[in-house]
Amino acid sequence: MDEVRNLLALYRRLIEARLRAQLQYRTSFALEISGTVLISFIDFVAILVIFANVQQLAQWTLPEVALLYAISGLAFAFTDLVIGHLDDFPGLIRDGNFDLLLIRPRGTLFQLLTADFQVRRLGKVLGALAVLAYALANLSIDWDLGRVAMLVVIVPVGVVIFASIWVTTICIAFWSVGAREASNAFTYGGQFLSQFPINVYDQWLRRFLAYIFPIAFVAYFPALFILGKPDPIGLPDWLRFASPLVAVAAAIVASAVWRFGVRHYQSAGG
Amino acid sequence: MPAIELEHVGKDFVVRRAAGRFRRRTDVVHAVSDLSFSVEPGSLVGYIGPNGAGKSTTVKMLTGILVPSRGRISVAGLVPTRQRTKLAGRIGVMFGQRVQLWWDLPLIESFELLRHIYRIPSQIYERNLSAFRQLLDLDKFLWTPVRQLSLGQRIRGELTAAMLHDPEILFLDEPTIGLDVIARQRVREVLLSANRERGMTVLLTSHDLTDIERLCSRILIIDRGRLIFDGDVDTLKARYGKERVLVVDLEEPGPALQLDGARVIRVEGPRQWIAFDGERLSAAQLTAAAAAQAPLRDLTVQEPEIEDVVRRIYQERL
Image 1 (cartoon, rainbow over the protein chains, first blue to last red):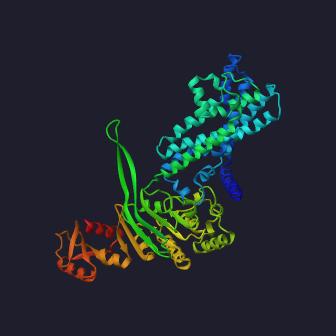
Image 2 (cartoon, each protein chain N blue to C red):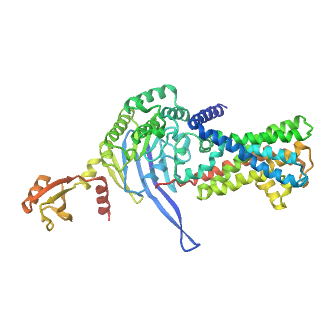
C-alpha cells in the first residue's frame, strides 16, 4: 500500500513538472487544444454522413451509435492524454536514450508511462463528452444502478484495454524500427473500429475484435448492456460484463511482453 | 567483497544486413568476448580502449542496461540485470553524451524529481545539494531551464544528478567529452574528492589521457572485447609510452635525417617527425644532433597520447 502511495505521489510530481514545462509555450498550447477539439468531431461527422442516408446501421440508430462513439472516444481520449507520448518510444529506443530509464531505481514501464502528460489532448475528451451528451439526450435509457455503474466503470476499463494494446504493440520497437506505424495501426485503427457496432463487420473481423484484439469490450458489449439491447449477432450475454476481466488480462499480457522486450533491448552507440 | 566483479563475461549482438535483393544475412558481432576483472571498493579505475572496443558495452552490462550473453557479473554484490532497480539506487551513472536532466525544466527541478525517484532522505539531499552547489558553482544557473545551459554547465548538472543519492559506485562514460580545460579540471576535482572523502568507487571511460593520468590509480585497457592491460599509470607509461616525437622544421626541405637512437617516421616538405625513446635520449640531445645535420627553424616535442599508447599496445600484441 505504501509502495502504491509512493508511486502515485511520484506520478503527481512528474506530471506537475511536465505541466509547468508545457505551459512555457502558451500560444502553441492553446492552438493545440482547440485543434484536437475540432479533430475529435471529424470522425463523428463521418457517422452523421452515414445516418443522413440510412435510418439504421446494422440495427443501430444514430443515438445508439453516438453512445458507442462517446464511450470509445472518452476511453481513447483519456488514454491518449495519459500515455499518448508512447508514440515517441521507438525514437527513445533508436537513440539509445532508453538507457536512462534503466539506470533509475524504478520500474521502466512506470517511468515510460509517467514520462509525459499531454494536456493539449484534453480537446479530445471535450469532443467525446459533447457526443455523449447528445447520445444521452436522445436515448430513453431505463437508468438503474447497474447501468449507471457500467457507464462509470467502463471508461477506466476502456483506458486499461487501450493502454495495454498500446504498450503491447509499441514493444515491436525492441526488435524493429517501423514500430510506430505498426503500433498506430492497432491503437488509432482499433479506436476507429470500436466506434462502430461490431456487427457491421464481416464475421472474421468480428471474431478478431471480440476474442483476440479485444476492443469490442471497450464499447460494444457494455453499450449493449446499457441500452438493454439484444446482441444482433447473438453472442452470449455474459460477455457484457466481461470487460473488466478482459482489461486485467490485457494488462498482464502487456506487462509480460514489455518485460520480454526490455531483456532484448540492445541499446545504441556501441 | 569486490565492488565490481566480472567472470568470463561476453556480449554478442546479432546484426542483420541485406545480402542480395531479398535475402538478409545474420552476423554475430562479439562486442565483448571474454572479460574477467574485479575492482576493490574505493578504487578509481580508468577503462580505456579505441572506439568499438567494447567499453560502453561493458559499462552498460555493469549498470544493468544490457543483459550479458554469457559469464557472471556482480556489482555491489548484486546481479545487475536481475536486481536492476535495487542496484540503480546504489550506483550513479553519467553518460557524457546523453541528457539525463529534464530538458524543459530548471536544473533545480530535475534535482527535486531525482530526490523523489531515488527516495533520498531530506538530510542527505540537502547536504549533498549544498556541497555540489559550492563545489561545482551551480548557483548562477540553478533556476535556468536545462535546454538553455552551456555544455559545461549541463555536465556539472549531470554530475550532480548522478551523485545526489550517495552512490557507492559511480560509472562515468566519457564525462569530459567536449568540455574546455577549466571545466574538465573542475570535473576531475569533484571526482577526486568524492573518491577520497566518501570512498566512492569510480569507473570511468575517457579518450582523454590527462583525465586518466590525473585521476586513476589503475588502468584497464580493452581491445576487441578483451582485456589487454591491467595496471597503474607508471607501468603503462614505462611499458608503452616511452616514445616521444620531436617535430622539426628545417630551413630547407631535405632527405630524412639519420640520427642515432631515433628514427624519422614522417617527412612533409621541410617538416620531419622524429620518434625517440624518452628514457634513453633527452629532447635536448636529439635537438643538438639534428641541428648538427641541418639548420633548424622551429621545433616542438609531442608527448605520447592515449591513442598512441593504445596503438602501440596493439602493435605489440600482433
